[in-house]
Image 1 (cartoon, rainbow, N blue to C red):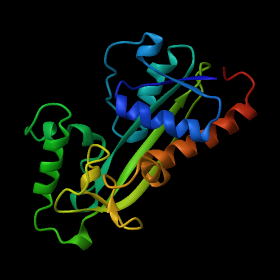
Image 2 (tube, rainbow, N blue to C red; image 1 turned 90 degrees about the horizontal axis):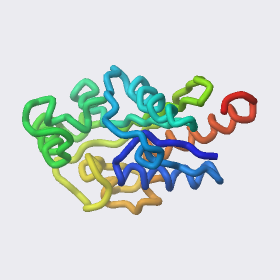
Image 3 (tube, rainbow, N blue to C red; image 1 turned 60 degrees about the vertical axis):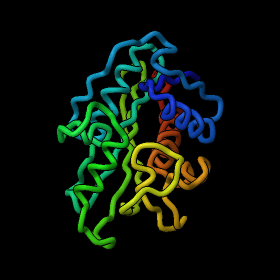
Image 4 (tube, rainbow, N blue to C red; image 1 turned 120 degrees about the vertical axis):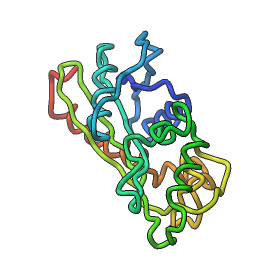
Length: 209
């Protein structure tokens, strides 16, 4: 079974391929480039789920099952920001160009200055959208709760991982192994939910492909 993941982010593709290999045996995950879909996909949704489906629909144009994911950081003290704008957080505030992890982290720390640890709760959120060749769609969501530190810890991961402290591990998500991260991460939780739902849909529907 072939699935097309609507992404060109090499780290994300590698991470999702690993997660799907663990949860959906026999699945071959292809990128947009692998199936000849070029150009940018305009993510103009207002929620993680809407953006995930926009990407999945573009991937499903390949004729295979399309998968799209949209993820980000929601911070309690910031009213849920940066949310769907997580990758472009600094850009939306006019402080950097598109998708600058370092600038995003600096801005997050700046906007949380003076906020005590007990009010720095946050969640990584991931929505996964799936679109079948026959047009049927579904979404699932995964989350992981933690809190935002006042300084970086760890060299692994990407994005906001060095600032996101996960209490059960006593570390940030940039300090854990890839397997540890996948076992609790928002993306890991979403992919496990996606694999379960996909198996159910395939078992119940005969004309999805």
